[in-house]
Length: 438
Image (cartoon, rainbow, N blue to C red; front, side, top):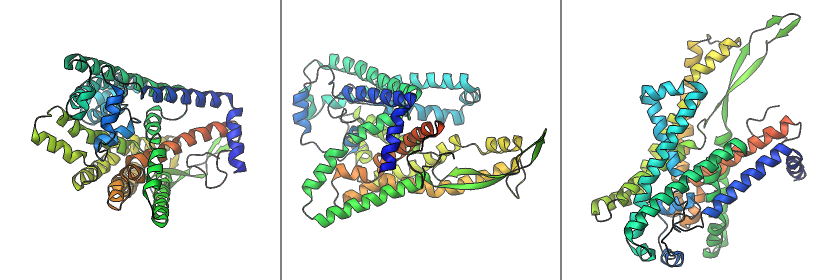
């Protein structure tokens, strides 16, 4: 504890790091304030009374957790950052199939700037479509009594406000990534999830009469968290030998280093992408409130405790793990870089054979990583079947736990890097966070 306290004190000694952390906390505070601002034309007190006894054990309740409660409260950030993530998925899929987007990906900084701009345009279009579905869903059923203005005016104002809200949240995320600490988009999602944790724990404590069962649940939860951390930090180290080079009177190289290949190289992005895809059927069904078939179709994808939802979610998670790993890790580029620097893997020829060797290892270690990611993603469904309350079961695994663990680790790694650059000790002197450089 003394070492941790010293590391925290060291954070505030570094002016740049202190400024970045305060900047990040300030923008996250602004985001949280926005979740409590209700849409124009909605009576917040009536809506709260209607939602008091509503069933949250569905996909809409899960989305509500992602946006910190703004979805059920009809807040201006009701759609959160999810449309931006959906647009990113579409652009990346196009980058794997459409030559124009492949060309942009190869154009360096200029290409990335164009892709970012196209992603923003896509976010506006997707948000507009989703906000129409959200407005229709809000007007029908019990929540319709909370609407105090005309349906046409409410529809137009909701589309405008929700679209502007999502664009503002996207801007906040970009500013955090650029001028703050950590990944802004991931931190915005995480802060919404954390907002639900205290109430979920309190409900679990108040509803459980058997202390042994409660302690057992908490013990299993701790084991799941430890497993997620272990897989997130796990990696395969490939030995790389560098040939000796004589430059003047100095000798360079001749040492053995390691090429780290992470078991979960894709991080938390596959499960976020998969969750965005799972929102699509329910969104489409909301456009047809009078169609029994569409409502059943949307309900099938909204029942997070059902087998249909779990199997579909598992398959999508595995697919996106491979897909995002292929984007994030390029074996050919790694082999070319090694060859230019005079490095080689013992027993493997530089160039094409090295690329194939790295790709083979990457494929093999990604399989267990993707399966583990998929199992953790659907673990809340099993927790509900075992008697855990639905709200707390969301933190037993699934997107919530993975985002909390992965985003926390990534943010700690960035803070650790700032500390080590200025010759301060990081958070851990033993059992270090992966990515720390000696």
